[in-house]
Length: 305
Image (cartoon, rainbow, N blue to C red; front, side, top):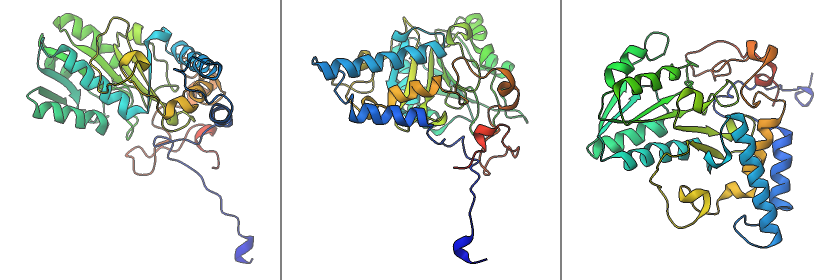
């Protein structure tokens, strides 16, 4: 057989790093960039239409989290959401304590932020994990005291797929009478498992579009109503002044991310259900560099790209 007759088939197994944009999200992004391209802050018709689309996207994501749409802030992705949560919370509560509790296996966007705060004089506790990659609840309890102002923990590890005991943190904080805010990096969990921030006692939650078949450059930060944050950026009224600026997100990324939440992919509001829930688990689609060598468990993570 001649070389020009050879057909190369690619099996993509790195969905923990990024996913292929689903057609629904891609089509919506194109529409927003070519038809509803106005600045949502503008007062003319095109601006109004763009703002209306953003409001719809915000409502979709809020529904997926059983949250209020006013609690959803748009960002450029998981890294910005994590940075905004960590620095914004610590700056807001710095007069009430200097202690931060996180884990030794966090994403670099949380680890690097914690290291910077450590250099600024904050005490940072990096909790170890056991042989399964999980933090033990008793380790969390031992680290938290009444001077703890932030607990930041990922829901699902991007390398091992280990699911952390986030449901235990709020009870521990309440028992310790700590003033801490609880931040969850849910980038690897959103759309793949049920996440209800209010029920779990989560104050801040980060998620990213491109992990669930949406476009890159779009993320969200859930901020529980009543939580005070100090912004990292200044210069605009957008996103309640927490994330000002007319960024790429306004060019359709937000609305297409909302489409991803509603599509038939692995990103259904409230997590997976039915047979999908039994077969598609966080971490199953991790790349070959991961310590988790299990093959992908559902068709959406093994389709040809």
